[in-house]
Length: 271
Image 1 (tube, one colour):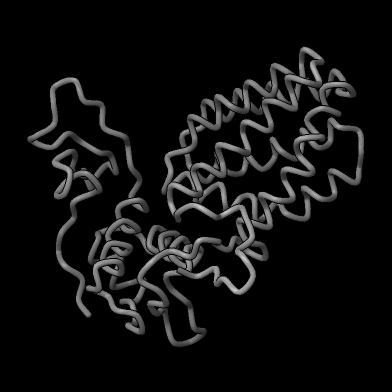
Image 2: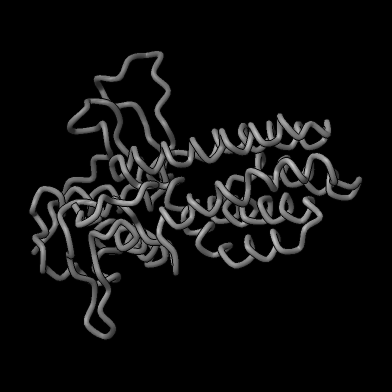
């Protein structure tokens, strides 16, 4: 099924807010936007993902339909295949599409899975483990951190705040959480974070594309670093708990409530 030729980003056609400058990947105010409005910058991946998701949710692309190839989508949206690939990866994480080897990508569901999958683990898997691991890890890091740990964490948060490339920021984000685990002084904690690092990176990329999380995450990370530097176990625990709570909130805003909690007996996770 052919995709419509609309290129309007969220808030454009429906909300009267912004349209996307396809040359720069930036949101620019639409004609209805007020003089004081400050539109959010969006990436080319955001644009492709938004249109494909809308096409599926409205039935323009029905369940069972095969999506156009990466090359066709690249031409349609005037973007590179790597941009298309990232958008398709996010749709698959949402549970809205499935990739069949040698055949292509097909629509699996009109709505997102309440428990999206990131690599080998679901969002619920990650949130449950992170609460039980990273919150105490933050407290131990505040008590046991060395001068080298402090230097590395400060360097990382400053690099994250300066980083403009989304992929580069995700890599730094993963390294940040590994560094906090290392600062705990317990190699078992570090091993656990290393095991889930790929899933954490995929989840982080997913949230940044759909939930505009990067700048807020920087603020949360800096609060954690400050608590660790000060050696305040309580403040570090509180900062990490707040960070994970906001991660869950962002996930729920994308896929609906219930992401982090197991379904009742007999209840399916797919909506």
